[in-house]
Length: 161
Image 1 (spheres, one colour):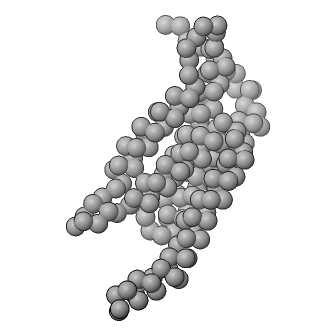
Image 2 (cartoon, rainbow, N blue to C red; image 1 turned 90 degrees about the vertical axis):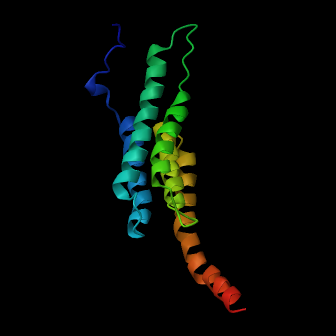
């Protein structure tokens, strides 16, 4: 069996550490929100998924550059297909329908977001990572405050009226 050449351990550099480290930290921070709210997929799940997606992306890009030869039909963007299938299985396992009510849909979407942010970290797309992380925090924390403060009053007014 023919394998690609090994990558020496001394090739671990700051770029790889920054991409993987950022993905791990952001994944943990995304999971913190779910953990504090008592949802099933918390710190470890989000951290592992975001970090794994970054590792898959870095590996895919590195292998593409290492093995690419004239006329090859390699497509490093297939990482999205693999990550999508993987996360879809995990997310589908989280979603529960009980008595006509859907549970854990936001957690499943949150896991998808952690995956996409991990892929962006692995690809070194720092503006995208920054915007995605900020939007995630605003949507998960800011909107929760808005829902509790204003939408709950609206629902109470509708029930009384």
